Length: 230
Length: 230
DNA sequence: AATGAGAAAATACAGTGTATCGCTATGAGA
DNA sequence: TCTCATAGCGATACACTGTATTTTCTCATT
Image (cartoon, rainbow over all chains, first blue to last red; front, side, top):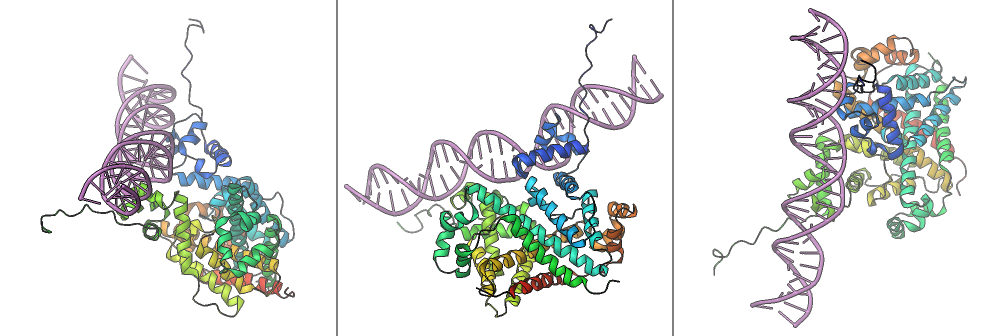
């Protein structure tokens, strides 16, 4: 019996692992946002049935956790610079850049504790930057404060970016002229400070604004680090 | 023909308005989190069919927007204190308290621009606190920085709170002993700074931690306000 | 060759957001 | 008082979701 007579063996299912699953999910999210990620579509990209995924994750939320952890690998800088301030600044900016590459990250940022290997590594890097410069509690407070800032700032930035994209207008134009509701509200005179900000404020670009706020927060941290370390 | 002969008129549908819809949605979210809010359930609480809601909102996302705006009314303080620092501190704390009352707020905070009447009022109050103390751009940067901080901090606090609740353990105990994964990771020695923080750090309560970080950020703002106002 | 175990697939279910569509009750006009 | 247009409402429908359960199949072992 030659090869030609024997039928081909039935197609074995392509092997799966978390890495491939997460990669597919990230690709979907990059293309269509978080809500484009469904277990069926993820599995579909891997030529598998949806239930197949449940061997690797036990809930969709866990898939999101894996996605976040995967992206946090992009955040880790190659090498740690000496200056604590530079280290924190870099971490913050890299997080921001990751969120600009993967906008869905903004929806997940800060939503759950990041306990994956890369998440822990990011936390480690953050703490390490300040290690020894003050007592542990001060260091922890500093880390929490800085990361609360950039988490919040990134979320707001992405939120605004989406709003601008949805209306097709720059934030200023939209507030100033074309957002009928906002315009009307400002016209009521009930929001004088806001009106002043909208009409007289300079339209500074997002990155600069992020960097400025970050510097302020880092200034605050610097001031607290002057106390003697333990 | 007496009243008794005449049949009752057919039951008129109970009138609806956004206020009642939003109240029902908030009640559901308070009880079961954001994912307990479905248009069917909201409508059900009002003895209406799901499609009825589409006369008042055109998308579920809009319902969320209305919910957020409603809760922001709780944030507005009754009267504005004279000191800008006190004003910002109060706004931050009231936001935090609102999020503790309505944990789902943490999921929505910063997710979309808050353009509802109460959202605008909160922004106005925040800007007004700093009005005249510096040039507009500095004031805006200050407002953005402070609110980025407390947005991020609140989100993290709620995220941790949920994690603790899910495991039934305090954050420290959970990290220190019972979270097998974290324990194992720390034992690898790859996260020395993190291990030190977990084992040697003091377990300060969430409100104090929030307040401390907030004070630091306010210090930073204070330092920038010293420049001459316009 | 039969059997057992394990993985994958198919099916199923309860629920979701939203589009569409006929009905019906209501108020305006005669 | 009757008729008619219309707006609002309910029902129905659709495509899709996350996940439980059941069925089928493949392979290694006896």
